[in-house]
Amino acid sequence: MGSREQLVDAMSDLLWERGYAATSPRAVRERCGVGQGSMYYHFPSKRDLGVAAVEHNCSTLLPGSVDILEGPGSPLERLIGYLTRDDHEPLKGCKVGRLTQDPEVVSDPALLAPVKNSFATIHTMLAGVIAEAMDAGELPDSLDADHLADLMTTSIQGGYVLAIAAQDRAPFDSARAGAVDLLRAVSMTPSPQTSRKDS
Amino acid sequence: MGSREQLVDAMSDLLWERGYAATSPRAVRERCGVGQGSMYYHFPSKRDLGVAAVEHNCSTLLPGSVDILEGPGSPLERLIGYLTRDDHEPLKGCKVGRLTQDPEVVSDPALLAPVKNSFATIHTMLAGVIAEAMDAGELPDSLDADHLADLMTTSIQGGYVLAIAAQDRAPFDSARAGAVDLLRAVSMTPSPQTSRKDS
DNA sequence: GTCTATAAGATGATAGAC
DNA sequence: GTCTATCATCTTATAGAC
Image (cartoon, rainbow over all chains, first blue to last red; front, side, top):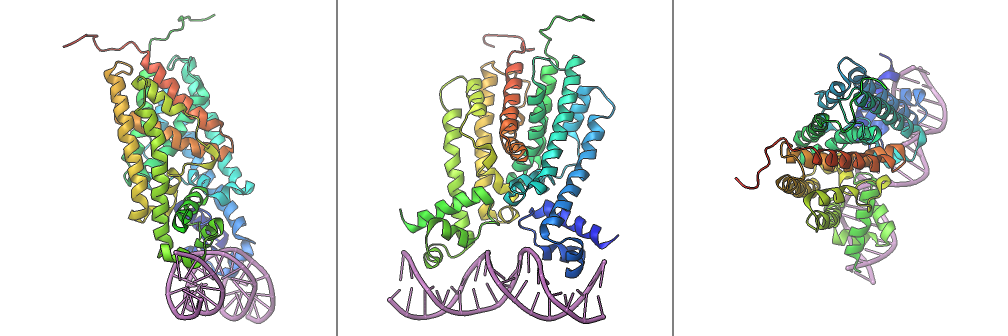
């Protein structure tokens, strides 16, 4: 593996552990063993390495969600699958979400754009699956798909906050369980709409 | 106002804007105009000032929630009032929640404790109001009060993440609306339990 | 492509006068 | 209680040899 990739990998990890502002070029070099000269040869500045690493982290995280949301199962099953997957590390925080708490990231369009796009993509996919669930009669179509999609994402992103504050993963699982409980509860609601095969 | 309070106020604001690690003693001094000597007279280290400011931010934020959750109205109304209050600044993030994304805060028990306690207090109050709503027949008691309480908090904490990523407050309001929509939907669910006046 | 040397500025504090 | 001076260390590079 070349120096360039090692630098991006190390920066990506440090972005996750400490954020952008708190990560120094030196810390990156020490983590991957690449020298000063090599680093500034591949990346003219910390910011350039940061952009590459943010993009790397964002593109790393999306496929897992896509696989579940566009995978097999009924729309509601996929939604619940998304909320109950077990490959999170709540106490470490979200590789992508944590970047929103870094003012140096937020104020730099090149650093923020991949983060913004990741959440926009997830939102579109979630809202699509929720709309499918409504069409299939699994959820009442009196609900707003965009609202629900955002609630799903916040139950995860907010779960990281609660878990880290408590230093315990329980609230992360609890919040997601609350979302699943409510979805199941409304899915069993007798639909107020007149049932019709076609019209 | 004395130097000590000015220092705590300035540090509290900077904690909100930039977090702990990214805030230098110099930035604090420049914001409040207090000299170097005064600062180190009142606070032996950055950490000591940080602890005072974290405690200040936490105690500043709680009363607003208490007023609503222990105020007038039925339990469900108070819960919805909590989710629809308009005194947030989504693009600025949460004074308390953002500290969970700062490893220097998380790894120092004295800095993390007030954050942990704030969320624990909110959880207890929310779970209590939700239990009241169940007792009053406003929510089905088949639901788990602790799960729902955590979901309420994550809808707000996660909302900050989405709003900052999008640089638009819309998803903050959308996620909270999704929570309200679901609560209203399940509150209208004909209760599966046999209705009884007393037993 | 990688190495070492160097540097201007910031950080987090200490010292001692007033 | 507040002030200025000083300090070792870290940050974010740049320069130039190999």
